[in-house]
Amino acid sequence: MSNKQYIMTYEGVKKLEDELEYLKTVKRKEITEKIKVALSFGDLSENSEYDEAKNEQAFVEGRIVQLENMLKNATVVDENEIDKEVVSVGAIVKVKDYEFDEEVDFAIVGSAEADPMENKISNESPVGSGLIGKRVGDVVEIPVPDGMSKYEILEIRRA
Image 1 (cartoon, one colour):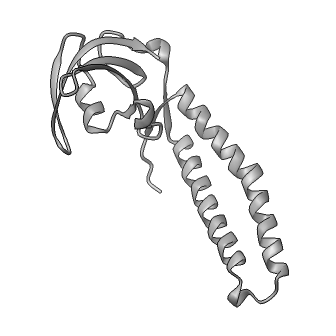
Image 2: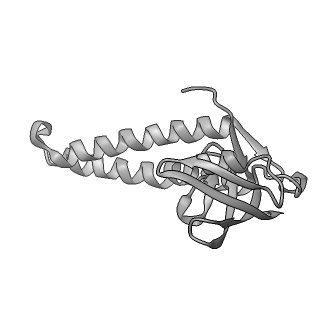
């Protein structure tokens, strides 16, 4: 695993800690039980339940390592120190989207917290990185996979 720094909000760290705790306590026990049951079926060479449980175990253990690495290398953004004059990680930015002629709120978060369905966009994404450092009133054109998006920054606030 790399030692990449993960910029996160307190909310994002808490979410990862909760997932890690769940995987270590609940999910590991569930998988151990599945493996015990599958072993009771006997012959492992044709035991799909055993193979499935071992694959699930490998996935969960990999995710645990990934979460531990992310938390170990997390840099937490203090929401109280967010500059409301300039777009930065932890800020909520209200923009006018010229393509769809609508106002949209984007929460700028670190890559580990990104969730486009909730308008939480990564500071590393095209739109997120294009908005970082901009001020209210700025109009930005950002190259995105399907062309150019144009936004006007209307408001910057803390989460």
